[in-house]
Image (cartoon, rainbow, N blue to C red):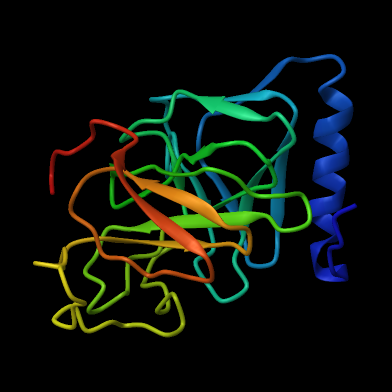
Length: 215
């Protein structure tokens, strides 16, 4: 059972609602223009979610979440999966997985779809991730609702000139914030990285997509 504080009761309600609808429908869809504020969580449980490209509105194709210390999350529970993510349809913010199998986070920022993958998580120890299309030396990106987001992770910004043995350079235009407690392999979109390792994650030099333009 997922323990969620009173502030996250909306998350419990949404998980239950989607789980019930999953008995009737095999998939869900989003056309964008959706925003999840801090401490809120919208869950897709045991069904496939389709990111629909195009449309109209303030943020067509995009699901946004608060990039604050108490983030908002779009979550995937059980066997939930997704399809259709692209440079014009993704989650601009944080995505969480409760799955114990490999999962790819459909995340991006500043009109760039930059997924990351994790080999495992658990129901009791979920993992979450967000992509930042800015330099880790500033660690501040624009907010979909206007203005700028605060620095995340909270230990940022980071000195990209500090490199360990064997590291030749650090990307100065983007980074990923990936969090979790279960030992796992991480796979990123392309080979221009800034790494913020948390707990026991391990790097794998592979790619999860071919979206390597606009580096």
